[in-house]
Amino acid sequence: MPVQVNTVALKPVPASDTYIATIKSRRSATMQSQVEGKVIRILVHSGQRVNADQMLLEIDPLRQTAIVRQQEGAEAQQKAVFQYNQAEVERQRQLFESGLISRQAYDQAVQSFQNASGAYNASTAQTASERHQLAYYQIRAPFPGLVGDIPVHIGDYVTGSTVLTTVDESGELEAYIYIPTERASQIRMGLPVQLFDNDGKTLAHSAINFISPQVDNGLQSILAKASIPRSAEVLRNAQLVKARVTWSSNPTPTVPVLAVTRVSGQAFVFVAAPNGNTYVAHQVPVTLGDTVGNDYPVLSGLKQGDKVILSSIQFLQEGMPVSPIG
Image (cartoon, rainbow, N blue to C red; front, side, top):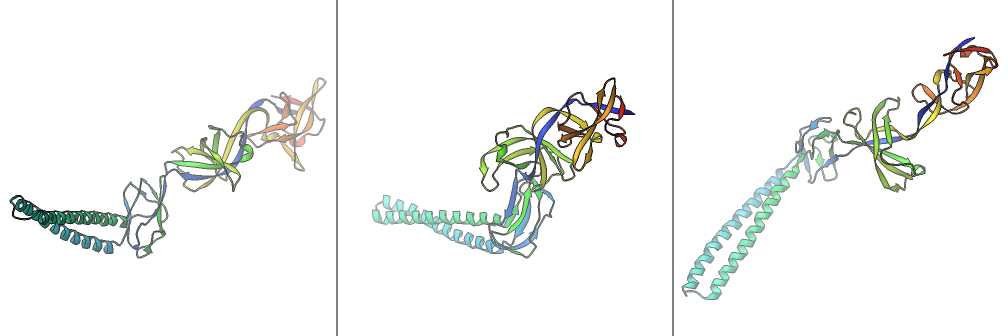
C-alpha cells in the first residue's frame, strides 16, 4: 500500500508551564472622600476616559463654605486690631522718644502689637486652611485614565470610608504570575511569557521583568511580573488570564497530530519499518507532550530518522507491506 510518510526530525520544543495570572494596572487609584456629606453632582460615567485633575464628583460644600465665610470675618476682625496696634505702637514710640511717656507704657504698646500680629497671622493661616478644605469636596482624577464603576448616586451620604469610584491607567499594565517555589531555581529575568484566554487565543507576548525576593507564605509561591505592551487593548485591570512561562527550548522529535491514534488512552503511531528491501507498517506506542502548533513533541517511542506514516492509517495493520512516499 502506498503511504505518505514524514521523517522524524528534531525541532526546538519549548518546555513550559501554564499559570493563572492577574492583570493589574501600574497606576490605579481608588477614589474616596476626605470629608463627609451628600453627593450633589456626578460629572462622569463608568468607562469614561478622563484627564488629570478633571472633576469626577462633587460633595455638598455648603457647611464648609459657611465655615470659610465665618473665618474670613474673624480674620477681618483680627486684621483691624492688628492695624490699630500697628499705628498705636508707632505713636507710642514717638511719644517715648520725646520723653512724654514712660518706657513701660511704650513696652505695653509693643506687646499689644506683637499679640495682635500673632493673632492675625494665626487667623490668616486658619482661613487658608479652611479654604483648602473646600477642595476636598471636589473629587478629581489624580492622573489620566479610565473611570471604573460608580457605586454612589446623587443624594447619597458619603464618609471617608465610602468608595466613590476608581481610575485606572489602561496603558500601563502588568501580569502578576505566582510561580510555585519548586521552580525557584529556574526563574530568571527575561523568560518568555505568553498570555492567552480560555479558548487558547493569544492576547500578548511579554517577558518576566520582576522577580520577588520573598516567598508568599499563603500561596508558597514567588511573584513574577511581566509588562504588557500597549497594543494589547483587550486586557483590563483585574482580568484573569492564562500565562505560559517558557523555561527552555530543546531539540525534540515531533510528529504531526494527524499521525497519532489512541487506543484505550494510549497514543500510537505507525512507522514504515525496513523489512529487507521493503517496508512494513509497525505500530509503536509513544509518549507525547503538549501540542506545539500542529505537532506533538515525542517524549519516548521514536527517534530521529523514523518514517512516520501519515495517510491511510485506518487501513493499516501490524506487519502490512507499505510503500513510503515522501
